[in-house]
View 1 (cartoon, rainbow, N blue to C red):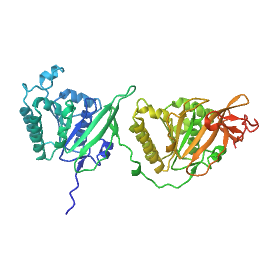
View 2: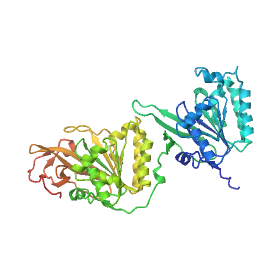
View 3: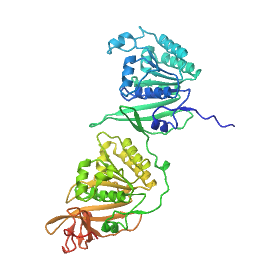
View 4: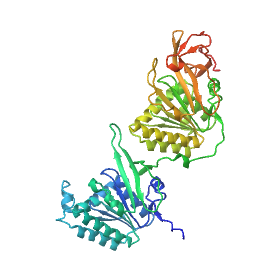
Length: 497
C-alpha cells in the first residue's frame, strides 16, 4: 500500500505556534479557532492573513461582528496595515449604531442570504486564505441548531471545492453546544484567558484536534504584545539532549569547592536552602561570577530583587556584575511573578541556553516562582521538566529556596529536594555574642562531598569560608548550637580556606 501523501501546511505568521502545529495549518482545510471574547482570536486571525499576504496569497476577511473600521483600528494598534486584504463587512447598520443590539436579527438578514453573500464574495475574489468572524452571529441567525449545522456543512462543501484554507472564529457564546461543530472541522484550536486574583491575566491555547496531522498536545502559554503574538510551546525535555563533557564547575572559593567535593557537576541541579538573609543568593552569585571570569555565559533570573540591589550587594562582595551585564557575559532578568506566565519563564530560560549559550542558570527564588500560578502541582511538574531539560543541556542549575522563619523552628514552604542533585543547607548560629552563619552539604548525587559544617562570612572582606566546625549540634533541627572554641571562627581579614 503506497504511503499517504504528506499534508502541505501554511505558516500562521507566529513561528512558535507553527512549531506546535508541526509546520502550520493544513492547506485547503477548514479550521476552527474558538475562545471567549478577549482571548485573542481576531489578532491571531489577522496575523495569519498578513503572513499569507506576505507570501503572495490572496486573502479575505469576512466580518459579521466588527465593522471594517474596527478591524483596521485593531490592526493599526499592532502596527499592521490591512491594505491589500479584502474585507467583507456584513455587520448591519443598526448593529454598528447601537452595540447593545444583537448583531444580526433573522428578520433583517436571513441566514441563507448571509451565506450567499459570503460564497458570492469568495467566488468573485477567489482567495487562498479566508477568515470568517464569527460563527456566533451565524448561530443567532439560524435560531435552530439543525439548520445552522446544515448551512455550515454546505459552506464546508463549497470551500472544499476550491483551493482555499479557511479559519472560522467562534466566541463560545452558546457553550451548551460549543463542541457540536468540532466534527465538521479539520482542526480545532481552543484559546483561554485566566484571570488571576492579582496581576496580569494568563493566556494559553491548546490544539483540540487536527485530522491526519501531527501536533504538540497540551496547554501552551501565549501573550499578545504591541507588535505580535508570542506563543511559548510547553517544554518536552527529552526532545532536547546535548552532548557535554562531565566536569566540575568551581566557585573560585577554595573552602566552598572543598566542601562540595571540588565543585558543581555540569548537567546537575543544586538547591541552596536556608532562612532569609543567610547568604543563599550571594553563594549563587559567587558561582555566576566565577563562570563569567572563565569566559562562560551565565544567566540569573531574579524574582525577588531589582538589579540595583543586586549591584550594591555584589559590589560589597567585590564582584562587578554591572560590567558583566554590559559586556554580555551575564544575562540578568527581572522576573515579575505577577506579570509572568510559567510558559513564558521557561521560554526565557531556553533562549538564554539555546541562543546565548548560558552554562550556569540561577533561579532566585523558587518561593516567588511558585506564586506565578495557583496550580502548584502543575507548576512543580513544569519546573521538573525545566530542570531535566537544563541537565540534558549540561547546564549547572542553582535553585534558591527560602525557608520560613529565621531562627528556631524553620520550615520548608514546599519540599522540592527530590528535584535537586545537590542540597546545600545554610543556617544562622550564635557564638561569642554574635550571629554567625554555617554551611553544610547534605546531599550530592554526582560525587563525594564533605560531611562537615563550616562557617562562612559575606562582609566586610568579601565571601569567606572557614575551617570545619567540629563542635556543632542541632544544625539539621534549625537550632544549631556551637559549644567549641572561638578560635576556629573566621575573623576580619582571615583568608578563606
